[in-house]
Structure formats: C-alpha cells, structure tokens
Amino acid sequence: MKKPPDAAQDRERADPLLVQSVLKAFAVLHAFDASNRSLGLAQIAAIDDMGKSAAQRFTHTLMLAGYLAKDPQTKRFELTARTLTLGSQYIQTHPLVSRATPYLQQLSNSTRETVNLTLRDDLDIVFAARFPSQHVLNTDVVVGTRLPVFCTAPGIAMLSRLPRAEAMSLLRRSDRRAFTANTTRELGALERKLDRAARMGYATAWEEFYPGDLSIAAPVLDAAQRPVGAINVSVTRAMYTPDDAEAAFHSLVVATAHSVSG
Picture 1 (cartoon, rainbow, N blue to C red):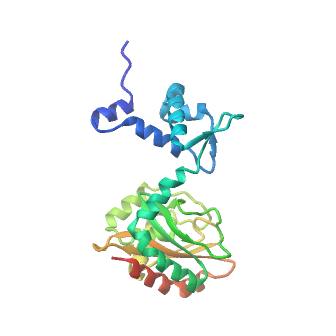
Picture 2: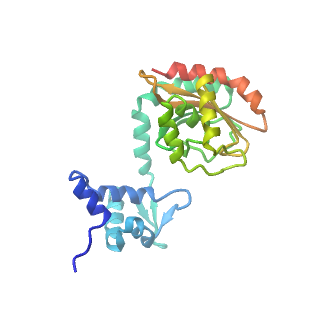
Picture 3: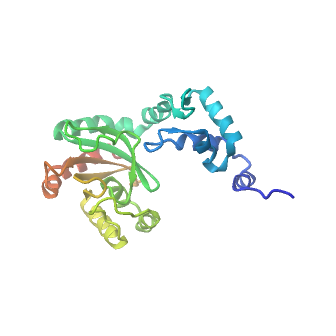
C-alpha cells in the first residue's frame, strides 16, 4: 500500500526551491530554549516527526558544524557558543542597530535607567540592543529575548503607526493571555491603547508582562513613516509611580526615537 504524502512532501512539491532538510536543521536548533537547555535524541526525533534515524543524521551534522555538543555521560545534546555567531552577525550588520547605538547610550547615560531597542517579528518584539541599569528588574532579558507585541510598550508603540486594520489583525492573531493582573487582553481596550499611542507619540505598559516593570516606548520610523523598531526606557515600580515615570521619560524617549528614525 502506497504511503500518503506528508506535509513536508506537500510543501516541497508546492515550492521546488524549498530544501526541507534545512528547515528541519533549524527546527532542531530552535527546539532549545530556557526550559530545554539539553535534549535527548528521542526528544529531537519528535520534532516535526522526523524520526530517530533522521534525528541522528541532523544531530551528527550539527555537531560536525559546531552548533551542537553531546554530553558523553548523559548522551544529551546542547547548543554550543557558536550559535551566538548567527545572532551577533545579525546585530553587527543591522543598519538600525548601528545607527541607534550611540543614541541609546546617550539616553542610558542621561536617565541612568534601562534602555532598549526592539524590533518586531510578527507577533513578538525582539530585543536588538540593551543598556541595563544598575537596578535592572529583569536580569533574564538579554539581546534576542522575545516578548509578545500586544502587552509591551514597544509593541503597542510600533502597532500604533501601522494602518489600523493591519494592527488589529495582528492583535487578533495574538495569544492574548494574562501574564500579570494588569495585562490588557480585550481588543477594545487594546485599540484604545493604540489610539492613545498614536495621539501621544509613545506608548506605556504598567506591569503588563513583568510585575513591577514600568515601560515607556516610542516607535522608530523609516523614510516611509512605517515602524521599524521602538526605543523604550524601563524602570521599576519600587522607584517610580506610573505617572512619575511617564512624566520623567516620555519626552526623552520620543526625542531619541525621532533622532534614530528615517
């Protein structure tokens, strides 16, 4: 009996230039995260139902390429430091990061608070540059960290400069779950946040993802006035009220974003 085609075969037939094995190799690398710092062969074999034989080939190849290491005792696989090269090359060659860095440094020096540049990747923001303060609240946030667009000040700031239908479509597709008691989840309330951000030129998020985190963000725009990133200052509730944080930092954040835009 002939075996029915799987989804991977369907994709390859639909796109003859697609190399499915490359996608699977990246799927293996993406399977590692803070909750899965090491993986066994059976766990890797379960990725996209690739099976044990394919998992052995992919892990062997990735080890030879220097991206995976295998613990000789546990037989589990881990990422190597070489994987950092992919991210660092992106950061080093991204024109917005290069252009923004001196302005971010200046903003960090003048505020003595945590300053970030974030980019949007569909439903997430990704930290592309970060200047933490001495009293940074979230030490686990580093360059490359991803957070949801819908409940972060940089995310709302960027969405506020998109055509409204496009922004609302992104919000509808978001997994609008509650991360804290203050997470804004309802579409109507989120649209009101977009209205305010568009009117004021910046967005705020008060303890919506991390308890105690207060964030003020302004969008960075390209020459066509579309958002390509956001700059934010993040402070702790232990040192500021939301009103005090907004009053102290919104004009500095907006001015910095304007300087980087274009």
